[in-house]
Image (tube, rainbow, N blue to C red):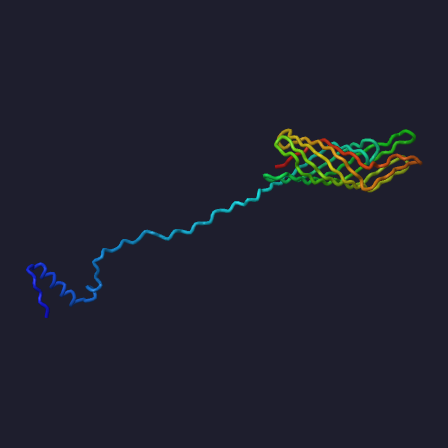
Length: 229
C-alpha cells in the first residue's frame, strides 16, 4: 500500500486520477508521450532532371540543285572553232567552315565545217556527255569561283557529200568557272578549260586530210544557271 502525502489538494486529485487511469487502461498511459507532434515534412525527393540536349559538333551540310544552259565552244576535236549549246544540271554541297563541292552533268552538241578549199565542205559534229567534279576556290553571295576536273564521252562525226564517219570520243580535262549573281536565284556563268583526248583521229576524204584531232583542245562556255532553294 502506497501513501500519498501532499499539502495541496490539487496535487492529490491529480494523483488519484492518474492511479484510476492506470487501473482502467495501463497501455494508454504507457504509450502516452508529452513530446509535441511533428508536423509532416513538405520536403519531397528532387525530381530527376532530363539530360540536356546534346548538340552535335558536326557542321550541317546543305545540298542545292542547279540547272542551266550555255553557249558552248570548243576546238581541237574538229576543224576551227566548234559552236553549239550545252544543257546542264548540278548539285552543290555546302557546309559551314568547309569548301563547297559540286557534281555536274551536261549534254552538249557543237558543230563546225572544214575548209572548203580544194574540195566540198565537210560538216563536223561533236555530241558529248560531260561529268564534272568541282571544288570552290571562292564562295560568296555575289560571286563564286570553281576549279573542276572533267571527263567527256560521246561521238565525233564527219559528214561529206558522199559519205560520213563517226567515232567514239573520250577526253579528260580541267576548267575554271566563275558564277556571278544577277538577281535572286539567277546567275551568269563563264568557264574556260582544256581537254586532252584519249585517242586521236585523222579524217580524210578523196585523198586529202580534212582534220586531225589535236593533242590538247580548248573548251569554254557562257550562259545562265538557276540556283534552286
